[in-house]
Image (spheres, rainbow, N blue to C red):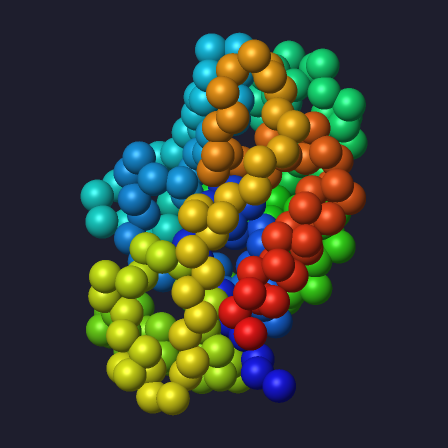
Length: 240
């Protein structure tokens, strides 16, 4: 039986594609030894508001060329204001308080480093979903941050004991399975099979690829987990 690994940069309040990997994989490695991407998902994600999809952002103190693990949260971050905004946005949803209870612990813990906030938040989300994957930071593994991109991926696979990589479609442009020395690559292509579910503000069109906050507020953590498990089972059965 294969040991499956997913590698992803530690995103803030990640989307369903990341959360599915928490069920699909034995290990999820949070890739914090790469450069912080200004305008990416490391410190923000999207939620659905009466005005459509909008960003939920953690302000950070940015320096050119810094790695994700070295990014500080800005003094301007107000976790209570963020929680109030979420409560106002999703106040009509059945599971908003259940969702915010999980988020609040990480948001209000006083983290100074973005990676610590994201890891704490993802850990709490993993527990709330009842997902089995273990979480690791790549900075804690014997991987050279300055090494070749493909070599780093291979090193992470070896360090975690993985023989199968659960890979997102964004890696198709540069990741060739033959370069990984016998590691099997499974392309999950999640966005192409993103499920539809009940969303807030139903008069608007369905918006895919939002933060898991959106799903949890409407379905609850147990309902979100059921949605993810069902979609994963269908996908894996179709691949056999």
